[in-house]
Length: 209
Ligand code: FE
Image 1 (cartoon, helix red, strand yellow):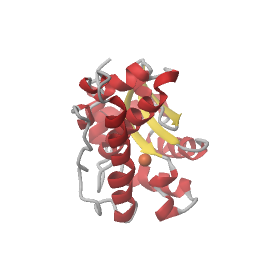
Image 2 (image 1 turned 180 degrees about the vertical axis):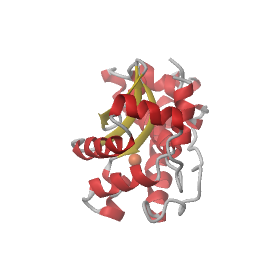
Image 3 (image 1 turned 120 degrees about the horizontal axis):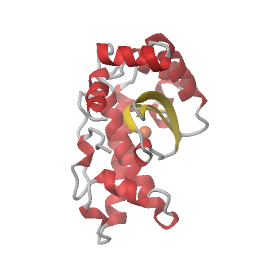
Image 4 (image 1 turned 30 degrees about the vertical axis):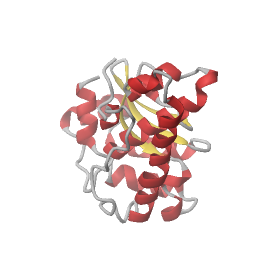
């Protein structure tokens, strides 16, 4: 499978990728304060912890997605997996968002029509799935065997360990929205999906699927 298009695969030691826009660029959908905490504290902590955990194990020489794949489902390395997958998921998440986001290009619009009932149905169904994800996790638009699907994962779990190509993701951990929306996850996700999804990034990922 091709690698997800993410700057996070540059590693050794694993580093916190810079945000692709300024911290206040997504305001008012996501505030500067949320972005600064989310990137500068939460994402940074996963990267830092990962570096501690893999030092001297040989894993530190691998690209991040490879660390994620090799530790997935291995009970003894759950902590490594959790931190590696969260480092990767967050890098993918920042790239999934864009201020004044573009609308889906024609190729994706056609796939949304064919597989998910069109763009409007996608917005509704993605928001519903993300809202229904119990506890912490992620909502994803993926390609599965040539077809678009909406998936959710729990905690650090990530579709890159399955035979799926992620196109976009939305973080539904409370740290992603609680300061701005408190318990209103649905409101947050809907605003993100309608206003911030980076369909150009999705199209780049699709081209590699
Ligand atoms: Fe997060």
